Amino acid sequence: MKSTPRTEPNHRILVIDDNRAINEDMRKILIGDSSEPSDLEADEQLLFDDAPVAATCFKVDSAFQGQEGLSMLERSIAEGRPYAMAFVDMRMPPGWHGVETIERLWQACPDLQVVICTAYSDYSWSDIRRRLGQSDSLLILKKPFDNIEVIELACALTRKWLVSREELNDLSRTLASFGCVDAREMAYTNLTSGRRTGLLWLREVTIHHSPHVLSFYVDITDRKQMEEELERARAGAEAAARAKSEFLANMSHEIPTPLNGVLGLSALLNEEDRPDDTHSMLQLIRASGETLAKILDDVLDFSKIECGKLELERTPFSLRESLEWGVELFRMKATEKHLGLISVDEDVPARLTGDATRIRQILANLVSNAIKFHRGCSIEIKAGLAPEGAPDGKCRIRVSVCDTGIGIPPETDRLFRPFSQVDASTNRRFGGSGLGLVVCRRLVEMMGGTIRVASRPSEGSTFEFDFVAEVPAVAEPVPAPVRDAELGPMRILVAEDNQVNQIVTERMLLRFGCGTDMVADGEDAVRQVQEEPYDLVLMDLHMPGVDGLEAARRIRSLSSAYSKIPIVALSASATIEDREACFAAGMNDYLSKPLALEALQKVLSRWGPGRKSDDCNFESAATSYVDNKTKPPQPVSAIS
Image (cartoon, rainbow, N blue to C red; front, top):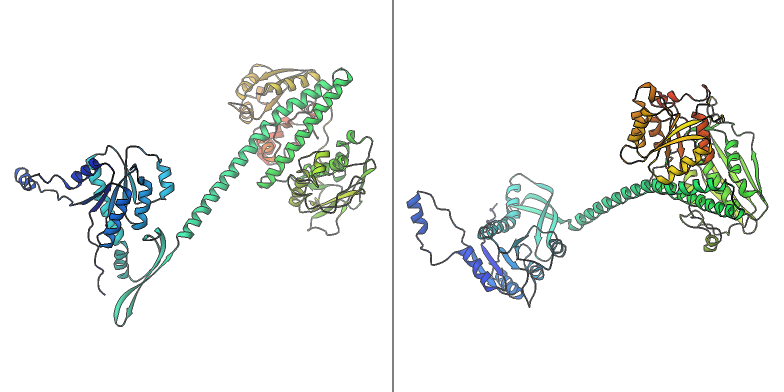
């Protein structure tokens, strides 16, 4: 097999600049002054006994406009003596500017090495890269340039041109001697389409008793670009998901904080002796705040479900008590409507294990819709075992909510879509986010069931959902309701950084005869606990500096005289992870914002001085969860 001849070195350089002085300077730098004595190097060797450094003999041609430079390049290619590189000025009025000139040059000779020479540019470097593409054949040289920079660039780039030309030949010679090559990825230059990427296969074969190298080259440039685009899209999607999670985390804290002030202050004012017209306005303020809180809960729940971050609890509960809770929640809104006819089949187990909170949430949405679209007849709730059955140790429960409201048209495909209602007129008349039923459907599916609706216009609707719950072999104890105790004089430390929430909490505590001290961060809370005797600490989780969790850990690490004080978390977020973090940090209980007077009273009764010794052991409430992984005490909220 004949060896492939090597490509000859190429030191031909094209300078394209409208300034003739620049062309002359480039020529002098790269070629030198012809008036220099030709024996200067020999004299230097004689005087200093030092071997001379061989100078590269560049061949420099000049063009004063981009069009002229392109013509010279095309002529050199046709004559078989192409240029290895070009120095191109950026501004060359009135013809092509530098970027357009380089585009034309690369169309004629894609492997031409180019250096942009400019003092300033109408294009930023990112603009140049965006227009010319990501190329390893492009560099920039700022004016005024240094002679050494010009010489080094010329030497390096003419050598690079030679290496790129020899790459395929060298690869064939080297790899053929070792047998074969399979799917080696490498870059190459196409005269029409520029820089490409491909996979190379090499085989040594014999044709007519003569050895040959058989090569296959598959262009994968488009595939590589698609893979890069997919990777960018994946990275963008991950960044968007992170941004969404961060946004939801911020909103779940920031929005309920002022909402707590609206609901708390309106509730306090509504209980004071005021004129009837003022009471009606305060009730409207509170109703508007509760509507906003409901919409916020739906949006956050929907977003958590979409992100796969919503987890179900496993706690013992009574289905009948959960259904009765759903009725009592709306009793005041339905005083003129026959709400509350509940029937539970006898074959439904008295105790189940599952997420009672989410079941109540589903029921609350369905009952709320039934009341909203009600026309004055009846609402009935039924529960029983579904005929489909469930795996061993579990049962499938079917719950239906029937009403005699306005009904739903047959086209119900929009009903379970996000942010949609049956029609636009419904939204205008009754309001709502259009997320309630969507959240219900997702929650039911997470519990292994389905939800459906049967309805006829003007005759009412029946919403029916299934869910799978565990049946404990031994009846698990359901947490006993908190016994209201007589609240004696209590001194309470409130750690809360929001001034409005400080006022709301203080006014609520004053209603129960409690004395309060306020601090705005966790570090002050730890110090205050050591300086003053308190019966209870209400600790906000999100505070600047030392947050509530760290403050609770520091208090629990104090001496026994201070570390045994009950600590109740205050937070707008009520996720399982947040509650577990509170109990793991040593807190004893949990209050969700917006605060309700009833919920606050239960917490004071549970942990105040009037509690009985067998009510709650606050010393072990948190430590038992951490040490023994037992269930933490149930959080107290507005729906407790």
